[in-house]
Amino acid sequence: MSKSICDSRFHIEECQTLLRNLSRIDFKPSCLDFGWGWKVQPVLDEIGDHIGFLIYSGFERPDTHTGVVSTGWGRAWFISLGYRQNDCKELVMTAWMAIGQIVEHERLEAFSYDGARLFDPHKSLDDLAHPEKFKKPEVTGHWKLGKWVPTERVK
Image (cartoon, rainbow, N blue to C red):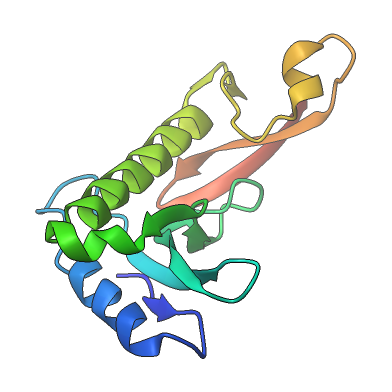
């Protein structure tokens, strides 16, 4: 599993409680076992009152450009302090959404046709809106004998 981190010097006990609850989530042996981990960070309002947490899901994946396997982190997801009153349902359901977004992102990133990534989630809005104006080299490749072999082509 990826590292689980309490990213704060404040509210450490509550961060650790969230991490303990998140550690109860797993994937039975399947192709979705990405070595999941979690990072938790408290959120304070403009006057310093604690209003919730951000959770980030971590996972092991090959880097999109180099193919080197390392830990990637998904976007931040907000958890209100209300999670305490509903038996962690908000926390678990938000974790479900966080993992689902990562799986979808990886699916978009991995799908290719003739070696070209068709649904690259790393493209900018300009790339998506005006593909004819932005012809950039794209790193593509394939797995060969357990190693990522990058190839470069112009799209």
